[in-house]
Amino acid sequence: MIRVLIIDDSAFVRQALQRMLREDPELEVVGVAADGKQGVEKVIELKPDVVTLDIQMPRMGGLEALERIMAESPVPVLLLSSLTRQGADVTLRGLELGALDFVDKSSVGSMSILTLGEELRAKIKAIAGVSTKHLLARSREPASGPAREKAGIEVVVIATSTGGPPALQAIIPRLPASLQAAVLVVQHMPLGFTRSLAERLALRSALPVREALDGDVVSHGQVLIAQAGLHMKLRRRGERVKVWLDEEPKGALHRPSADVLMTSAAKAYGPRALGVILTGMGSDGVEGLRAIREAGGPALAESEETCVIFGMPKAALEAGVVDKSVPLHRIADEILHAV
Image 1 (spheres, rainbow, N blue to C red):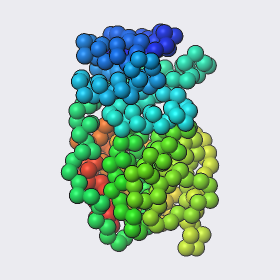
Image 2 (cartoon, one colour; image 1 turned 90 degrees about the vertical axis):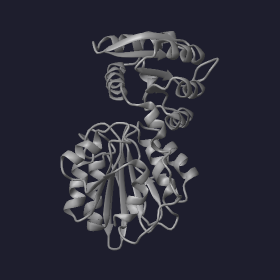
Image 3 (cartoon, one colour; image 1 turned 45 degrees about the horizontal axis):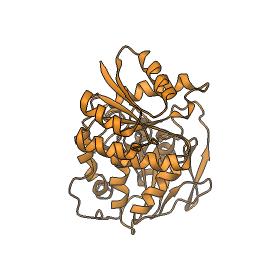
C-alpha cells in the first residue's frame, strides 16, 4: 500500500484527488493539508510514501514547502501545476529543488479528468520508493568543470522523461562553448513547458539553448530542445541538416518521440550520431538507439544508481542497444570521450 498525502489549498481539488486515488486499491490517502505550512507539519507527522503538492498556495507557497520538506523529512513529491508560462517556470524550479515529477491540474473538473486520474495514479506509483536523499545528491558528485572535448561526432541526441530536467541541468551546462557537435534533446513534457526548460538551461550553459523551430539548421555548438506536442526530425540536404517538425506518426506514445528523432538522426548523420538515454518511465528510445548503432554510432545510458526512474535506460540495456552505462555525473565527459 502506497500512503499519499495531498497538499492543496482548494477543497474541491483535494476532494477530486481523493476520489481519483481511491479508485486504486494500492493507494491510500493518509491525510490532506490546505496550505504549505500545514503540509510540512503533516509530512513530518504522517511520514507518507508520496506527497502531491500544489505549487501556488497561501501562507506558505509550494516551493517554500518543498524546500522545507526536502530539508526536514525528504519524501517523493509529485507537483500539481498549471499550463501557464508562470506555472511552467515555477514547476521547473520545483523539479530542481527535488520534486520528482508533475501533473497538470487544470483539467480537474473538466472532461479530461479521467485521463488525469490515470496519469496521477501511474506517476504516484512510479515515484513511490525513490530515495529522495539519493536524488538530491545525484547531480552533486564532484565535477572538475566543463568536460574535456575531443573531435568526433556531429550530433548528440539525448532522450529523457521523469527526472529529466535536473538530469539535463547536470549535463548541458558542463558542455564547452567550443563543442564541435550539435545537441538535440527530447524531454517528455506537456505543451508549454519545453520553452521554459530551454530558457532555464540557457541561463546556466556556455552553449546557446533554445526550443527548436521548424526549418532550423542543425549547427555545431548549439542545443535544441524538441517542442512538446510535435515530433522532431532531421533532413539532410547536401552539407546542411535541418529540423523538421510535424505530428507524424500520430499514434506514437510520446510526441516528441526519442525513437523518431534518433532514427532520423541515424539516417542524417550515420556513424557521426551519438544517442544518450537518461532517466524516465517506459521504453522510448530503444528503437532509436538501435537505429543509431546499426548506422555505426555509439549509445550511452544513465546507470541505475543515479536514475530517478530506471525505465528507459533499463529497457535499452535489456534490448542490447547500449554500448556503455554510466552515472549521471559522468555523462558529459562520456559524451565527448566516447567519440
